[in-house]
Image (cartoon, rainbow over all chains, first blue to last red):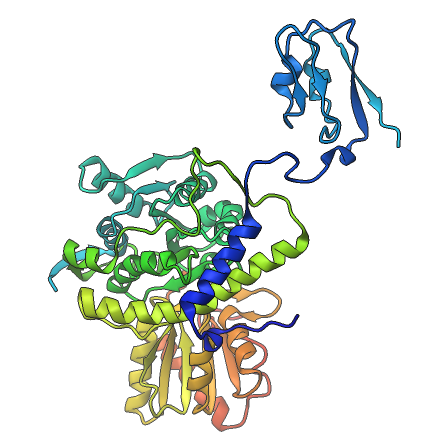
Length: 107
Length: 396
């Protein structure tokens, strides 16, 4: 609640330092995990829609997605994980067949 | 303990200290008056005297970013800059401190333009005072050398783990040759073992994100750990000062401050940096005339010597702070800090001098100190809250 700490409050400097370092690492470092920054799909105002008839399955959207939310394998139409897609539109922009359309998100 | 007497300019002394500290990575961008530090280090690396990776970069922002990355990888690192170079680094300055990256930086203090000016005042170094860096400044070439070696021990200490800046005044120290005692490599090795890679090591084999987006409360908790580190650093600085004297070169400076003729002093002058030597001569002159004055030389601006100042002030009638940096719209920089700690316990006069590198001799300090004592004795202290600009050549 209320905290005060100065040179004259130091009792066990090494122990206090270790407590600080433990807190520091806990708050500062995060292992790679799905959705480390929460469900970022909620930030979206435009969403990408793939028109399968136009898609040539080239994988450009998969390659360029800055959020790594496009799944694709050679010879297959990609799919997008909408839980984390922020709607930036890079996929639509790089698609050579204009097979991805950005449409207004409906809430 | 083996010491070798050399004659070196301040910049070469700092380079020599960096070599003895066995740094792993150096990155820097040239700027007068700092350039000779990194030029000399580049020579050392080229000749194989220092087994370090020297990274050439396109700007100061990149220089600090490069050593920051190397420090997070567990390396012992060094960079150096001045004035505009430091301002260009400013973003990374804060990142480094908030990441607890134990970087050591040599900072040759230089005026910030305009107008263009390569001489020394203290606005550049004091611009980082709120960031979490440990900020020290030397009075002479020997101290610049000693502080540079000590900086690695202080910054890398588990109880601290914060970056540290070692300041030296442009030309007065950076380009002035003075006798220097250089210790044996073995004594420095015994004092400064290889770095323990803390608080964490960036390793591509075990990837993690650092400083990811999180709740605001986490940010405040992280700042609290930095606050605590700076407070603990006060103990570490004193301990390192004593141990360095014992193991390396016999010189003990006094920790966060140096006390000069303060034992029976009723008047206290406060300065920091190279001109403190001139201020000491002025103290001697006033002492010869029977004025009980002493000098408190601040060695570390951060962590600020709060406890030492309170102790010195407890026996003082009045204090004068002579500042080479101004907080525009308020006061001299150290005056604000001294007034803040003392909270009105002792009357404090603030004098601003030497801005733009204006030469300030011992005679100027005699003038400043005499006027201060005179005003106090006549009871003319009502206006002391407003800093007095000392410009003897200026007619207004």
